[in-house]
Length: 287
Image 1 (cartoon, helix red, strand yellow):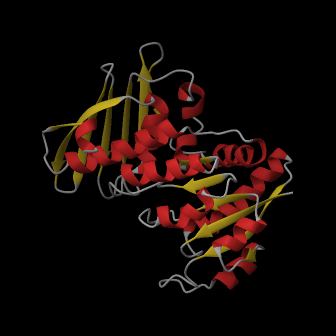
Image 2: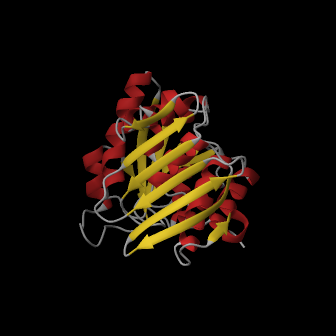
């Protein structure tokens, strides 16, 4: 059996609490010989919830390990979580990226382009298969139309959150529809409202709108198919199915270039909102 380990800063959070059952359901659907077997956390408990690692492991029927080294010895593949704060993701993921065993890094992959590059470069040096994504990349309505077969000429994403972590959901959907190739962007702001227009090297456009209290909405279109709303729903099952295939069959569901494009779009957005109305190039965002 392929033994999977889950690592996090602390184990009591929405993703860590739900992914074990989601993953087991996907394993069952695939009739795969795999299971979530071990868990590791850097902190004994979260300061807010105070559920200990031992209590969490008992509830989710996994075995707690005391170190990343121990987990790497015991497991064949890893889920590196840290979903609510991507800033410590690089430090948490590094031992696993050096393992040579498959690693899924939960959203958001890294807080900036530079960290993301280091993480991918480390994985390459140690021949470690790795990918990262937000589950919303796998919206059922998005997959048939823009799942690598037809690229959109236009995409529009609306949602809540911030430009460091939570915005990854919107950027994943935009990148899934549009593919890589962002050339520049311009931001327009009004209080906490951020509206950003991205232009691609071939002239295509995508818009990103974010403000507190907004619900997720996504639309995309092509000259051949017209513009259509994409329901932001039904993504966890196809995402978990892809994760199981990654661990058991070695099928990489999201390429490095796609994740790096998302990291770039986030970084461009953070610079653009500092100077509304000014065009920010992709090159300028990483200089």
